[in-house]
Amino acid sequence: MATILSLVFALVIQGTPRTIAIDERLAADAGLRVGDRVVVAAEPGAPGDTVTIGAIVARRADPSEIARGEYRVRLHLDHLQRLLGYGDRVDRFAVQTRGREAAERAIDDINDAAFGFRAHRSRDVAVETSQTFRVVSRFHRAIGVITIVASAIFLLCILVLKVDERRRDVAALRLLGISRRTVHGAVVLEAAFIALVGSVVGTGIGALASAAVNGYYQAHYRTPLRFSIVTPDIVVLAAGLSIVLGVVAGSVAALRLVRARPLALLGR
Image (cartoon, rainbow, N blue to C red; front, side):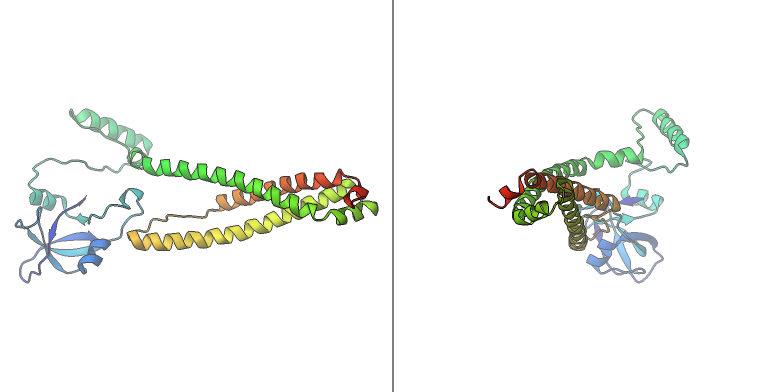
């Protein structure tokens, strides 16, 4: 069971203290190691108990704990109860169950035990505490949609300009007897290839940027949580959107030329 305590540290030579577990952030900041003896108290300056650090616990990848700078200490339940003088009361406790039906029965039994008890699934608690991150996720999704639309317009303009510069090449192909469909298909195929190459390059840049973001913020907050990830689903979606937008933009740009007469493309 974890609690957040104010700690007063002192070396103790005699006695056989009980063991506690501390988080790695506290161990790093206070220079503590397994086997060190410290004094733990409920309030700063209050008499406490001499304990031995039995373990150092790694931080979990929990988004709700990112901005929280508190230290965590794990004690045996009876030790914690005696240290705090809280009596036979608890603020909250966790029950592990096996299977969905067992969880439902446990929730009903706890809620029916006495007035004032309220049991929640850990999944529901996680959803409630992650509302802020869900809002940020929606905000990022909106930014992504706007970026895709803007990039599509930019891509169309670039392809129109590039294809327009090849008026003489298209006119020569048409005068050689190459059909409009063949010329149009060649331009679209070229646009799709460029889009595919761009998506590969973009995936590489995204992976490097993601690694840089994770490296900085994981060191800053001292957490294993990954702040940026590049998943196969994202790569497939990005590549698909890139190719589709490239084909559409190339098709629109090519239609402007293949519909014109060859001599008009030569300026005659």
